[in-house]
Image (cartoon, rainbow, N blue to C red; front, side, top):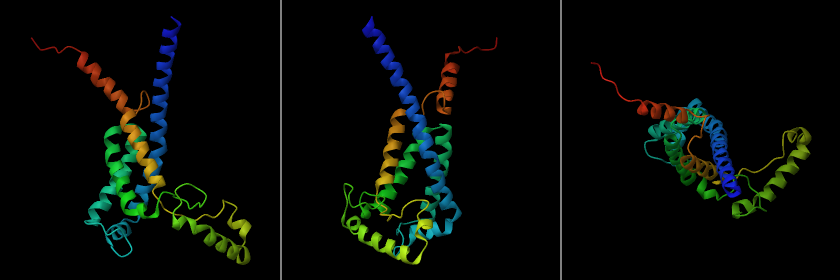
Length: 206
């Protein structure tokens, strides 16, 4: 009897944790993709140029089409994740977007998003960052109001590695497995609606 109660309590806790995890994943990712999409939309011509230019950009084929698809995917993804609608489905093109970002933008910079020579996976580029940061700090302390400049946070060197994009990709993979979650998603309520509709016997006019 005790084992049965413990098992039931564990199952309820597991279901509740899964539901909460789905909600938190969706609400964490939604603003990230919204801002990414809005930034691309607000400077769409520049985004197209960056996608297509092989000298200082990504050198991708069909830059207008790819820029449009990336922008639309991120904006639609942010909305659908917020609503919990077609969560598993929209996660797939968002994953593709992250894979493209990882391979075409971030891969050559290694793992770290922010350069930290003491962190794991520090490559040669990251190992060179402390000297540059120290030199920049010296210049700012000598010629600028350093306390004001650092009042909102310390200066760092952006390494632009795959860390963030890989994290978002893993979170999207988790959403494919977990789904949108119960009660707080349109996916759940639409599923409930269709299941109830299927359970009602069909009636035909006499």
